[in-house]
Image (cartoon, rainbow, N blue to C red; front, side, top):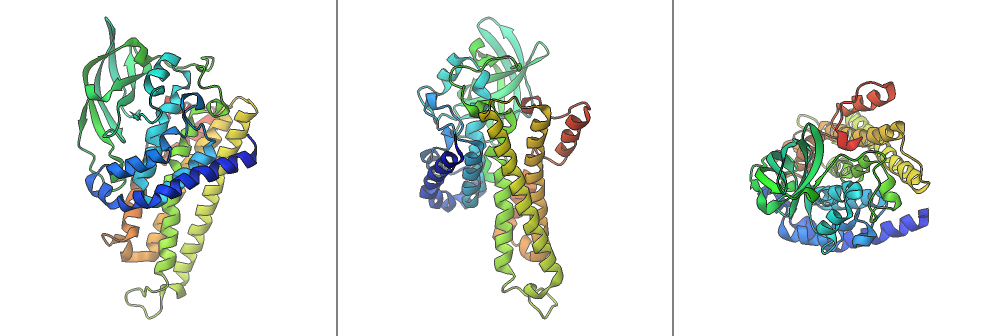
Length: 386
């Protein structure tokens, strides 16, 4: 795929987003209050082919480049962060299915490319082999989008070895307990799996480097390391940083700080915070997209991802999220009490960012994970991202 083809692919995808963006934005406040995505927002992103971004073409998917996926994620997040989070919700399992049996992949998506398999790797479930399959028990946390899912994917420990299992959601119990300060519309509830027996086909052993991909997953996208999934949600943080910058740029034109005679536009400290935030945002975004492009080009050239290249991608994703949080904090220093006004856009931007920056795969501790790779130390980050 040439750079021109990527640009064309990206333009077409963004045009589909533009066609539904107003619908998504219109329901953003409802989703925030209801702690789940609005039905019409969900329908809109399905119409825009969000579920098919990382699905193989042979299954009706679009199989887009990581850069296109990231650009789409930013565009949707500009309208509603919760809707944008569903890009990951829809596509994470579709990426991980590269080394699953073709029969399982066909069971999940052959008749419906838009089918949602919600996934979470927070808490491995317990599995016991029984006649007819595997009996699975436990509670999985942070299962974003579970209200709309037909299946849930989760790691399962069987005989002290980690597997992945796919379980029909109608055999599970969704607990309506997602109550957070930010990212409320993601609907990331707990899901209880109480002694559910699933067929052996739906339980996949851990993939090894030598495990071949199935026949649907032979394109360049699936030669990228698994953490290319960052393209499906890291851009939400970048969008929030840009939204904060834009909101403050508008605010300073009219706001006069309490006890001051001059407007914010004349305050040297505010000017410094703004300039620093702009530099941080632009550099972090550039670093992230550059890491995606390098990863993509290596996949096109059929080059194996080295530990160092994987660490570079991990560093770019972690840094994008953590730097976005720093940008929002700087904009809070400029905005002052406006940041704390309920109903003001900066209030939600701040709450969403504070929630996102603690995500297990990109929280501040993951800077250390990069050093572990480069120093040859023991790794502490999730196996599914290695």
